[in-house]
Length: 196
Image (tube, rainbow, N blue to C red; front, top):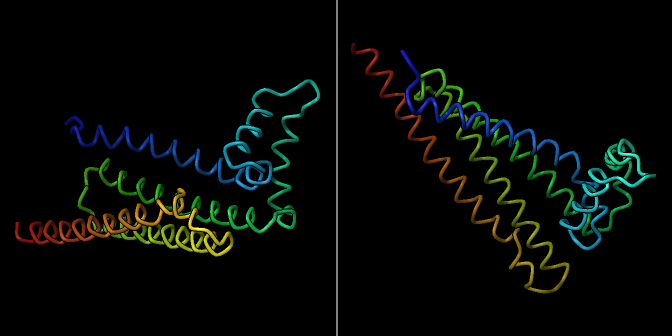
């Protein structure tokens, strides 16, 4: 019997989630370097870093630039000012949580690919993803509060961190609802299997 359309979509999503997870882990490794080199902001730091790697000058050594990230992970934390330290810690924490969310998505997609979409482990995976979403929302709220107190200004309320709070809180609530639905569907399926 051939694959049903849902399984075909799940296969494509599984590949996309795997690519997103790989990119997430790669960028997570580079976070301290991007924050440290971006005195004007994250985008400038990322452009500077990747520009040096992708378009090296005659005297640039690509391996040294990549090794600099490892050095910053090991010994560079004392070089950060308070803003860079909080930003780095937030981005690393959010990146780890995002990797965990993507991993849980892979677990759900694997049950769909097996042809068991209403497996009880899907409810557990979605509940874990919800916890990760709530942790990102809490970290973003803490960072917004820190920024408002540190700068004595309401301007941090208009940043992406302030947007992360409701966005990831809603994502966590959605994952909780889906988790409850998958759990209930798994229970109904188990009852149906017993009655037949």
